[in-house]
Amino acid sequence: MKCFVGLDVSSQKLDVCIMLSDNSVTFTKSLSNDLVGASEIKSQVLKLNEINHFERIVIGMEATNLYSFHPAMFFNEDNDLKLLHTEVMIEQPNKIKRYREAFEENKNDTLDAFYIADYFRIERFTPSILKEEKYLALQHLTRTRLQLIEQMVTTKQHFTENIYYKYDTLPSELKNDDDLSTSLYSATIITLMTEDYTLDELAETPLEDFAELLQKIEHGRFKNPEKLAKVIKKAINGSYRLNQVHQESVDIVLSLLAREIRSLDKMIKDIDRAIEEMGKLFLNINA
Image (tube, rainbow, N blue to C red; front, side, top):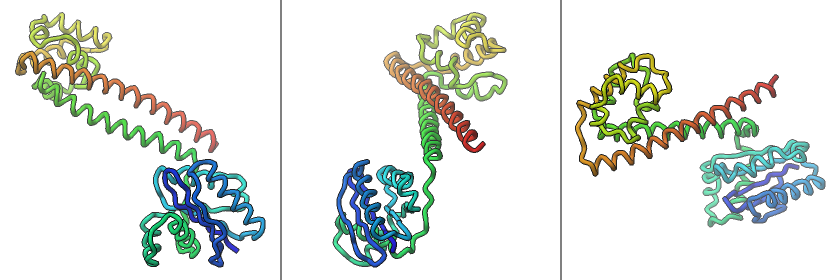
């Protein structure tokens, strides 16, 4: 005898149907999608196994992103179910939908769970492999890092657009000189964009003093601050001037975007460290 557990998973509910290989239904119920509901399903499976001594137990559900994650991991990692060699399967919703539509029944949650169990009972599915939790943990970190990188790209694009209003020639001037050890998003440029420095004040600042200011902002790390000072002054002298109201709005936007760039940069460094630590854990496990 074989046992097939069909789960229709939503954010709040686990609608369950337990079907045996002889097509008999032994248990149907709507339970909460939490530890309590999942534990009750496990209890029912163990009780039925004591009577029937199943040769195969399959717990199957549709892939529903976040909602199916916890029940799938619960049944897959449970030690009692592992002793029975329980198989946890996650199937693509479109495959179960096509199977169910062949019967042209009215849709409801109880029927959905029934047809999910019946779909797995006919054993035409391709076994799915659930990732171990440590791999899912690493995946969670790397996907979050990707999201942060995408946010950073978007924010830097907006920052560049707004810099154009204030220093319309600066992006091209920095790009054209490969010898400069700075970028449009360096701490130095961001400080010049967001602190209380007007274009005219910077344009009138003597080159030596301007170079000294750049070194102070960058904590003395520039090899040739005079050259950078010349490039920035050239960009300032060639840039259009905004009226005061527009200039203030651009300064506010640049300041906000600069804060976001700094925050995202810190978060990316933090998650890089977390990924590195996770990598060390993998090496220790596999050693």
